[in-house]
Image 1 (cartoon, rainbow, N blue to C red):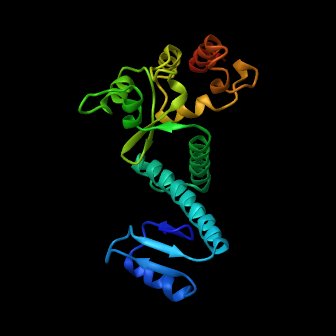
Image 2: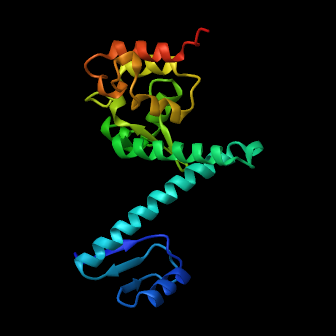
Image 3: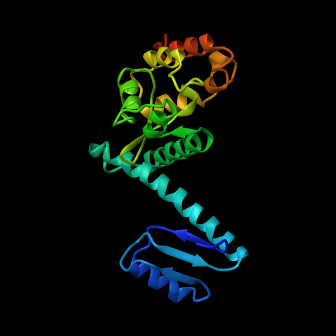
Amino acid sequence: MGADSIGLALLTPDELRALEKQHPELLLDDEQEGSPHALTISGSPALLSAVRVLVEHIAREQQQSAAVLSALASNPERAVITTERLEQLHRQAESQNAFVDSVELLTSAMIGAWRGSSAKNSSAMASRWKSAGRIFAVPSGRADLYPAFQFDEHGEPRAVIGEVLRHLAAESDWAKALWWTAPSGWLNGRRPVDVLDTDPQSVVEAARHTAEPLEI
């Protein structure tokens, strides 16, 4: 693939032919017959830039739709939902996308490599840490992604993460994740992730207050 070309995935042969018909100015190369993963578009830098923007927009919309569908699938008894509920699901999807955009995320294999694990299944280390409540992850399809701020410079889980997670044990994976990037009144409006290095004990206290039942 040259400097003046980009690749796209997830186009079926029928979609490819439709795109060729609608936009003959694009030079399309379907290298593997019947494959949805071998499309290359060649053109001017300006045209390719516009295509990239479009693809990124479509990808983001697909992520939000997937998050909404996932939420619906997890609550089959609420298959018929109100407009308010649908708007809530979209807001949740937008919050999740914002989290993914703002935080470095690691796969379990990346964590294993960081730790220099020579085990046959080096990615199992992150899963063990998660099961032990030392770190948390957010779901991405069938895999887990782990926010990098949970680890010290040696790739070890920070002790403060486990302390916080004990207070947030009743929360969902995404609720735990979004707590770290939401301004906290217990931290004078700062986000827990922003004071994790400088004042970890205050972060633990903020988590404890979050988990406390409201007094009426």
